[in-house]
Length: 228
Length: 171
Image 1 (cartoon, rainbow over the protein chains, first blue to last red):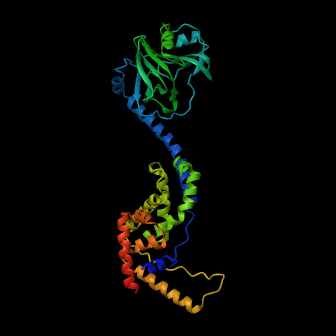
Image 2: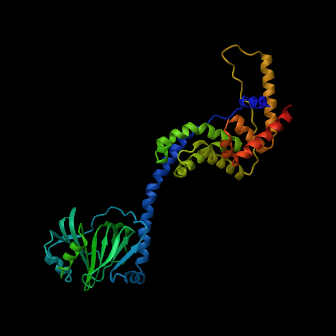
Image 3: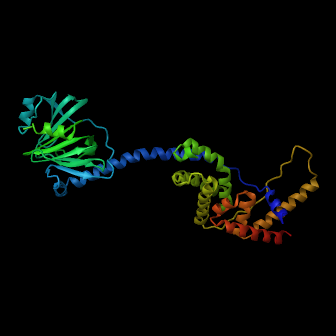
């Protein structure tokens, strides 16, 4: 009986008024978006701190270094690079070549005079940085550390890590990665972590050197082999 | 729709405005009260936004959305551990600006409507829901199937059975 169906349709049943869902949902989506940003950053920092804590243990560092042959550099591979706070190069104070050699008699010098030399004594044994360009616009950076200092590098699937024939042992890092230096207390601090690009790392005797700049692998190796 | 799928919140807000009425009323029919219906519809819209990437382009949006919203409404009713307490009632008749119907006619029409609604409210829940979806919300068979989470064939058979029961009760 279609009449009943028609009557049902025309019944005009009472419904409560529809609330303004669109505005409420818009607000929820915006709050969700705002929440996600600091969360990503917070998680990234936690990742860096957790990794730093794990690799501050010497045994686990040795295990990682086996395949590269670098005693003072640990490499951690992660799925996605953590977001690190934007920090400077943490160069320390500017020194003359004489002052640098006095504080770090193990210093190795490549061909070509750097534009400035810097000494950071908060790193065990001291960290000497040779800068080409200016501190705010570095073209090439050679960092040298004594055998008492450790570097940690965090890489992801987009970073290529290869062995390189230079000094006692070397490795070429192509692409973005995160670099951290251990302080005097033996801790890696995520606040000092920074993003690095193409870098050659090698060991020469008891010295650890890292050369960073817009270089190809061959260019980096050519410069590295002049440091003695 | 395509803009919303790409994450354009303005475009999604337009979609919500276009569908919030039917989404809220569907949730109300299932949840049984306005407060749960509002929460269910809101949550449904937010979940739908997150799931837009899985929405098949070209397919109708309304049944897809109503399935999500109705599911939220059912979850609320279940978690509250109460039976559907919805009792449908007729809206107050609006007097038209034209010739007013006679008071006698009003009373009769009003009584008829109340009697029919009482018959609907007396149906089993699954039959009451299918009648509400098909005739009060005027959902299509496809939309009703999505909202009630049953197959379209079940909507057809359940509607037919509900109408028979109504005729018996209303006769």
